[in-house]
Image 1 (tube, one colour):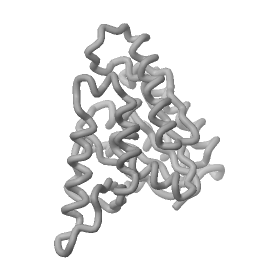
Image 2 (cartoon, rainbow, N blue to C red):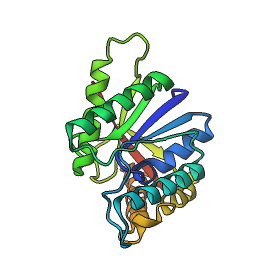
Image 3 (tube, one colour):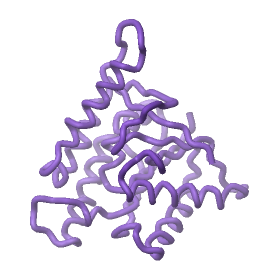
Image 4 (cartoon, rainbow, N blue to C red):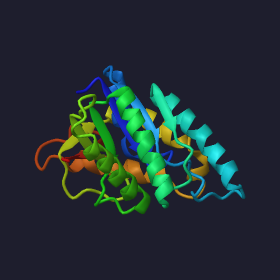
Length: 221
């Protein structure tokens, strides 16, 4: 396992929902985690009547609380509204490049660019992969592995399973820091159901050894 990993989240809560348990587990093992949040979350649904700027500030406060719960050392929340325009896409790519050249993570975690059904997730992942391809000959940086985490669309198969049983309480606390999002959708209940399913059905035979698990697909450039 690399000493430093980078998790790219299209929205402020994606890391916590998709792989909060794994992040807490890796930090417990001495891994340094950098969290790069691609958009400010102003376009998210909320039950409160907030302006875009107000919601973006709420979500910044929430993600700061969430990463503190997990013990993440470095949070980089980008002030980008969305990744729909070419200008914003380039803004993200520039900031992503600056981040990886600064921290030199051995592993990078993103949503799956084809499987994940959320369009913003797919766009952000493709931008990450585009930039990594452009940097493939850069002697300053070489990524060892690219992992895709499971969030909006369950995987039919996967390459890695992480037992998060000892860290699921931290994951729950981190997700629940995103109060503005839980007001209209119970992300905690939904993802814990998936994590429980992964643990129970990971092995075809024998006694279940895990309570909760998160899974990942390895991606090649």
